[in-house]
Image (cartoon, rainbow, N blue to C red):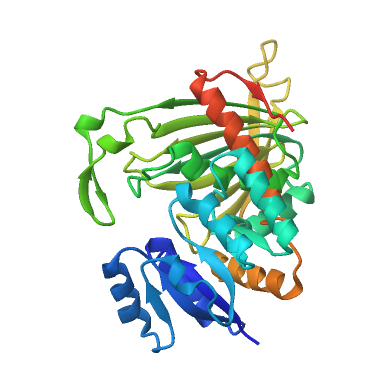
Amino acid sequence: MKIGIAVLGAGRWGVNLIRNFLEHPDSEILAVIDPHPERLAAVQKQFNFNAGVILAADRSQVQGLQGLTAVALATPASTHYTLAASALKDGYHVFAEKPLALTLAEAIELCELAEKQQRQLFVDHTYLFHPAVAKGQTIIQQNQLGKLRYGYAQRTHFEPVRRDVDALWDLAVHDIAIFNTWLQQMPIQVTATGTVFPKAEIILNSGDGVFPVSPLAELADLVWVTLTYPDGFQAFIHLCWLNPDRQRRLTVVGSLGTLIFDEMLPKTPLILQRGNLNPRSSDSCFAGTIAPQQTNFYNREIFNLEPVEPLRQACDRFLNCVQTNTPCPTSSGAASVELIRILCTLSRSLEQGGKPLSIGH
């Protein structure tokens, strides 16, 4: 029997969720909820829903809908807690976009509610379902990079810009999740510094047209993050909304090589650059001085990965979780709580001008 789903939010990401759940053999779209009539008209035109699919402006119109089993949230982050709590109380499984909530207390409360209701709370950390991330984890666990030295990531673009969260909450969770997965550790200390660009100088194009970005005056749009892990490994993350150089790149450097995940290279997103550094021989012209390092490059390996859409993998995993009523280890509400714990600590560091803070549990 197919799992009946209502998708809340028919914007850019909501359309992707609708497409994937429509195409999956184990799910059926029963309703799409969005307060913007033009969006509902657009998805009706794109997907040509049959007359049985409800297109509505308010979620109250699907409460008690026969056959409805799960709700997928593709709405602004500030609405996630309220919508997820309501759906869980009504007895539905929940697929939520990141972040699950904007406070640690709310995220924990949602997890407790899901457990009480015996329903699945699944958070769409899409990158954890990317074949490049899975392969990268294997490479690191096989010690192919040698002793890990440090990592860095860049996640920048010119839009979309959020109105309810800053660049830290919008972007950092992806790279934090990947680093945690690759390292199989959680950071113990974090720092964050941020900047708000002069808004009067900047006009951006949103999905609904051109608008001045003055509503974002209190939201940091450039953030630098440092994560420190128990073994001393550090990861540095550059996050920015207002950068025309679109980047989606994460790197881990080790003593035997460097692993690069570059989403902007869709055909070859994962590269392993093997190489190390050795002192030059003592009979070189530098004998008697501090010996410079000589780089030994072995090869540059590009991996052929399975051409699967990460979001499709995430949707498939969610449906499996619903069918078995078993949480996903990497995308459960409990896993998301730990990421929100890190984001909350980073926010406090940002507010305190970059003060290093320990992750509390």
